[in-house]
Image (tube, rainbow, N blue to C red; front, side, top):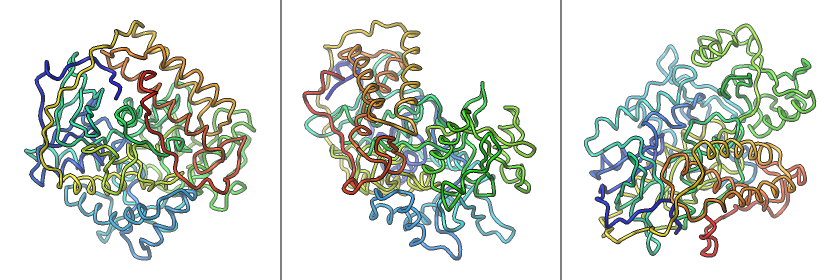
Length: 531
């Protein structure tokens, strides 16, 4: 166990709870609600505000078998195809079979989804789906509606307490059991003592220079779990969304997969529609295929973007009001002109290794949602399966927590041997940006041994500068997290000597026989001094 903060639990007054949930997205709040309704006291802690999560940014929808002409067998088949031979079929079967009930539970909690004139759910279609099965809200604001409904439901639960601007820095683990966490709160350490702890911290897109993810998405769950001795799985598989706004001075705003499902077409800057030559499904090919095709066309045309043509989609502004409004605010009118787009880091298929009920290899430590890895997403996630995963496995994690009784968690934990960080905040922030550029350059859509080896050497050198230091600011903790998680991604990517799903290597451009296995990373005792 390696700590990043200096503390002694004997000198701190604990905040006690039965269930500590770290994160406020679909997975975290679903777990919290189910636990609270089962009579458990739940503390939800978030690094920023309750609204700041990947769930709230999701546009497309929730993939679930809710209409005629569809079946869980078809949804399972689509999920397996997208996963490129690495999907855990048993986990995927759980996902598609329990998905419809999870959507109905969400509706019961007040979520308002788009409906047809006869009152049935309006179902859209996205890349690699064989049927219309995407449940959506306000056209293109599904995540915001899911987050709103879950927050409103949580606010009504007396057993749920929320603590905002609380940055969890270290898990407290002794003899293979987790007893809570230490957080940075109001400038000092806060002792969170819990009978069970749930990591629902979301993704890690902010490790890259261009991403659709919110500010805090740095892979905190992976960093916390790894340092505590938990196993991580499939960290090499980072999904790049094919279509994010690429305009100078503007953020990488996500243009939903549903736009291509509605008829959006991709052209390079030479005016050629290119997806039909890259895949039989053209614009509706799996995300990894579309992202690589775009990157190839950008390189061929020596351009920093391609163009998404939405001008032929009838009633575009009515179907995609939020996308239209946002793009217009950035000076692009999707009704009248083509949208400049490029791939951006979007989703992490890997994460903290868990079973089907969120259990890790550490007792009383759980993980769910994007922070976790069950193998359900394989090497490449199927569009709109992410919100579904958060809901389904959030419920399942809560079920497992019902069996957790009270535990004597009064053991002393301390870290008093650490020295202060000497670099200034501005120096650290500059290094953070350098890190993002490095990862985008060497661990982006296309990778090779030489580039990744150089990245790993640099990451280890930077990490050595901070080994044994005590973090006292959010910037310090963020940087340590960036360095560690970037290193874990790089190590896994170097070890996988093939291309599969979202992991593409120019020196091994094809999938290889014998590589249909998951990568596992776990902290060894000899490595602790280097963290």
